[in-house]
Image 1 (tube, helix red, strand yellow):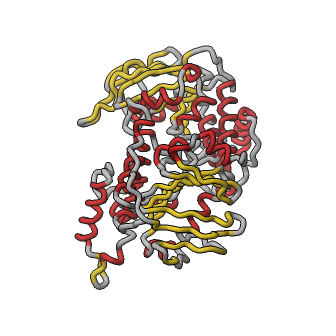
Image 2 (tube, rainbow, N blue to C red):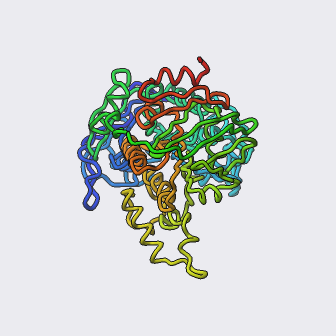
Image 3 (cartoon, helix red, strand yellow):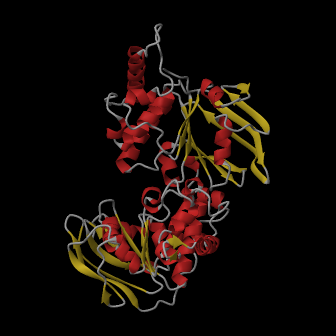
Length: 500
């Protein structure tokens, strides 16, 4: 398994694709060299998915030309794309948990011998070849459900390589990974590049394209904005190309009319997570909390919300102590939590937008034993409209929404419940820069409407742009409080790493 890394693997020339009422791609050109990772970035709706689906045979192009290794091709369908050496490693794992690693690598493609039995011997030999190729160690007899997230990700790459793929499309490959797991993924990507495989790298995490990609292509509104070598471009320039403006310009003017103290946390302690936490937040204020992974940020806010009980201390609202022993108690106290893992913790996947939004007010909508469906739909439609959630109707499955719109659905269920205190844990995690801008405006609108906001984030520029004050945590303690307009990213980081 080796490839010549001196030639062009893929070239798209003036590709166009139109859907009813939408010009999804407008004469877009793109190319990928062997041994290269080429990032494709842009907002949701920019044309990234359409371009990729044309390459993988899911969509037919309306016009333009496609070349594979210099030969013009017309990709008939997904099977033809696989035959041409093109494979996708999707964002969400498509693995069968109860099957082992070997079975997942060759799922649907089990080789059989002359008597019709599965030729496990040849499959194991092929799997060992792939593992050596990736310089990776794993027991392929282990059920997938017992593997780490990083191992599952590499297993998906192994499945693609089992097709003898020369072109790998990695769709948001780090979305489910932690820092160490990302480092391991990058190690594998470098091995793939060294072997001459070309990688199309799609990610909303723009900063990570610099250490792993050679070039970046920006799409906006179905048009090619530009292609650059990453060594000759910076993050701010990429963002301006994506948005048509700077991200800095996306931060609205902060609310200057802060009211009285609404929430106060006194001496809050949870052994092993955080200790002696004290702070207060005023009406209309946006308070930021940051720190490195393991600093205790998420544990703190989930304790305030009642998902994890604290050992000592108290939380008061309007001067009165709140007895929060569960999220249900927090909801009664008009507290809402938008979690960092919106898909698994903030949404009911497989359910409609209406069902996700109205879940916090179902009790108030009941008449005798039944929910008043008309009132429910009216209330949900109103908040969906207020938040400009892009959907066909409130009966649409929430799974089909973009990341930014899913985030809005999570927020909608708290707004419909009229929550006065809203906690955002990593509110822009996994969404594109355009959706980030919308979230920033939403948070600012809530602040202007006298909601009390807490924002947990490791995006320091984001905190400076959004908040009035920032609490920095390290090792479970608040090490400093900074006035946002008088601090910098360097100062915040100095405290976060313990340089105080």
